[in-house]
Structures are given as structure tokens and as C-alpha cells.
Length: 348
Image 1 (tube, rainbow, N blue to C red):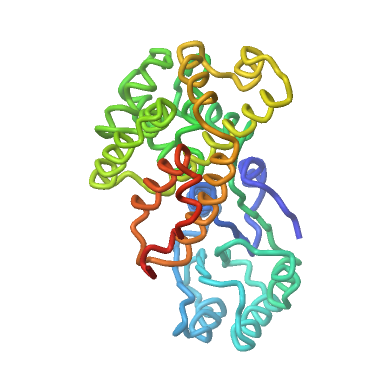
Image 2: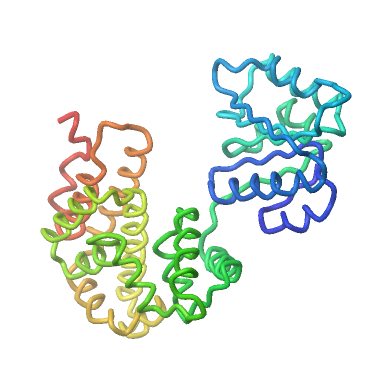
């Protein structure tokens, strides 16, 4: 088995297509881009037809095997794309994939993609059988410096020049949502052909997306205006702003405040702390006020509640995420009160 990562895919595609491709992970942009790149190359290498299967609970695995083994003098070489909803396949499904691995067709490229595979899943018989002749491409979330590098690479792809802190700014806003970030870079390339995208331009683009945005929410939260935060969240709810993006933004902001507060308690100079955390000069007064107003106990409570909110929204659908987000804003300044109240307002 050859294991590659998304940034190595183009190099791999300079070679003849492997008979099997195993693309697994939960980051959608890399997965979709990998699938598209392979399918775009396929006709160049003679694989003209693309056939798609989705392996839901009622999927007929015999149909997949018959399609793979179908032979005809006039048949086109083809790509078969199989989408798995789970890596936990029953014995029948596993046996069909093992049988396919034992009878490789030079006229077919089989691409299997699905959710993240843990180490145990990679030991399953079907995976081991296919991987002997496969390219395994796991896709992971991109964050930190890797995300900033990704932004710069995609900007280069779109022939877009980004100034100074713009890659970091875009990465901060869109982390966890690469499809939207790539779409935004494409829009900027069209709207500002030949221009360098400054921080002011980037912020104005973000602001135009909605009446309120995550930057305004965090600034208002740092000011301590919890009532306005509630109004902003209600507005963003009706504008269709993704709750997951706001949860990430609040978590990042509160984690940074926690680290800054801890450094101050250990005797660090406030200006050095602000510098260490790369706080922009126009935001220093805002952070100084927040660090004076917010207690370490409340930061602990908020971070605990953020984890609860994230879990709740991923495991239940009856909760309004924007009510829970409002709770987080209130808890930052009144955590000593809210700690006595459960986030499970449905059960109360």
C-alpha cells in the first residue's frame, strides 16, 4: 500500500492510475478535490466512463461486484466510485470487496471513499486486501500553520496576492470550513484582479457577507456587552450563519483569554502578553479591558460549557444552537451564576 496525503496527490497523478484508491476522512474539501482530480485525469488515461454507487443500508453488493467484473468487447474503461457511509462492513460486503481485490481489472479504477478510518478499521480484511494494490489517501483537518500554508497555496492557484496578515485572518475565520474558504478566495480573485488583498479589503468582504460576523461578535463580547451579543446571535441565526463556525470562534477567543490571563497571574507584563499573542494594536485596549473584567473561574466555566455545547449539538437535534451560544457569552461574565444551571434546557 502507498499512503499519500492531499498535498502529494498531484505528484502521484503524474503516474498511471492505481487500480484502487481509498480516500477516507472527515474534511470535505480535500476529499472532494481528490475525487475531482482523479476523475479529471481518468479520461486522459483512457477511463472514459464514471459509475457511482452509494453503500447505504440497503445496498446490493452483488451489483457492485457484477459491474466491476462485467466484460464486453465494446466496453469502455471506467471509474467506479463507491461511497461508504461506514467502514464497519458486514461479512457479505467484506467478501465482495476481497473478491474484487483478487481479480484486478486493468480496465477499471475503483475509488472507495468514506468517513475517517481509525487504526482498527485499517486492520479489517477488506481494507487490507484492497490496500495491497491501492493508494490510501487519508484526509485530516488542516489547522494552525498548515492552514495558513494552505491559504497561500490556494491563493497562488487562484492567482491572488494576499498581504501581510490576510492569510492568518482568513484562516482564523474559516478554519474547519475549507470549501467556504476556497470559494471566498475564488470570489476575491474575480473581484480584485491584479490587486493585492489587504487586511481592510478582507475584513470588508467578511462584513458584507452578513449584517453581523464573528469578528464583531468577539469584539462586542470583549467589551462586555452581553445583551448586544445576544441580539447579534439572533440576527446571525436568521441570516443562516453556521453555528459551528461561531462555536469555534468563541472557543479560540476564550482559550486565548485563558492563556493570557494565566500568564498575567504568573507575573508577566501585560504588554508582553499582548505581543506574545499577536494582538493587533487597535485591539489592545479591548483585550486589556476584558482581561481586567473576566475572572479565571468564569473562563474555566465557559471552556467547560463550550465542550458541552459542542458535544450536545453533535449528538442531539432538539437544541437551538444559538440559545446555547448566548449562554456561553453570558457565562463569560456571569459564570458564577450559570454554573448552577444545566445547558440541557429541554429537560428542564
